Length: 85
Length: 354
Image (tube, rainbow over all chains, first blue to last red; front, side, top):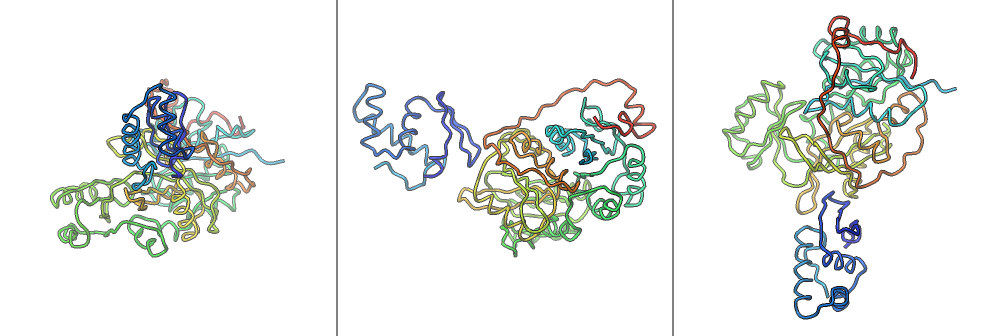
């Protein structure tokens, strides 16, 4: 998880990975999740954070969270076996 | 009082396959050292660095490496008499053996260098890179060929695709025997023998600019990932990164080789996180100005060490610093070109520091 913790994330959603030199742009939702993951939040806490931040609820939040984590795995930003628990 | 640095630098051929000289000189100027003067050493009157505003104080043609050591010795002696210099930084692979041979004489004349030995130069040459594998450096499998016949059985050593390389420059990926044979003849025609055939490794291309102290230690190092690559495989843009695996790799190379001076490690990091050292270039890379821009000015540190100064402690570099190269049309009149073409020199300083 060190790679995730090292990510530099700007307020505008620009992300720099100092390990690979890769850059990404993320929307507010993904930025919120990345901040939460860097802080070590669990699934319930992340879902609550998203629900509070974006005034929404439902199963979509959990599925969106899993989709983003899947992308993070593909980019190697979290270990291949990483799951949000 | 410390004598001002007067640094002679080669490699002013800043084309789309640029020599490192312009980057080295920009780094030296970036340090704003009082009294610094730069003497450019060019092989051709049309080398772009000759005509860059404010880059070199004086510039001289020098003989091509193929002419041997003696003409270079005489030319350097002339330049020293004409404008003086107390450090020389050669930046091109092919000229390094002659400068290494001349280093003791130059030192006796008060001209400092920070160069590897001939043995160290040989150790990292493409034809012998595999030997570094025995010293803990991960290098791809390779074969050194002096005859195209060796290509016909190369698949028994490692599978296609393969990389066909010239002894100094040039590399081409070949997916079939036909492509490999074509690449072999192209390399041999352009760069001569031997031709090196290397196992292709897929992954991210990373580079490390490192300066060794000659005792197995590291003066400093900056890591970079190319973010834009030209059709010649040259980095046109890049970003400073930090990877602890590359730190370890660089330390291993320094310890194994006891390298003295600048070098560039070209490394592939594969999808599984493994490292493969493709080449070790025995000089500054063309992107070396990134080191100065990122806060660790390695060309200036080399100039200071070569001059016998104790360089200021190098601060860590700023990860995320980028370079983006640019192609500019320089405007000049006929006078400097005429001077380079006829007299082989442009002298502006008359030996006086900035």
